[in-house]
Length: 121
Image (cartoon, rainbow, N blue to C red; front, side, top):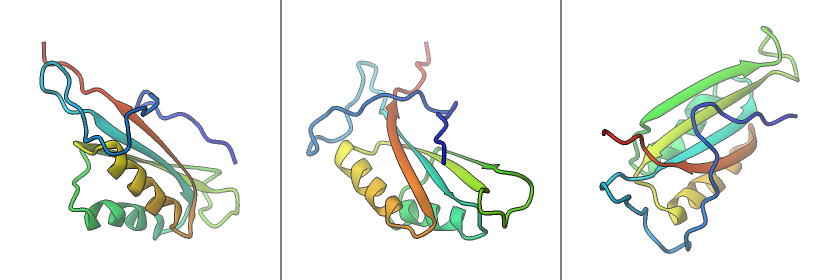
């Protein structure tokens, strides 16, 4: 199993204290939490991952799914990479979401990162 970096999120270490809410940049922009989830390729993988966000009443700003390992979904080496971006999620909530994602039976790994939204200037 190989984890490939996502082109949708630049990886940045989340280094704020766990209890601190999502910080705002000088221009009021809210950081975007990014989750890269590697799962078995199966028909229930995407809904199971998205359910974790729905249960927290979160609407992702972006979702990207890609399949690797060949065209046959049923081969053991076939995997899905699901990248979900959500605005306004603090560090503590982000870590809690990642723990819930890791508990899903078909999930192999979860990477989290944070990016700053593009400035409108």
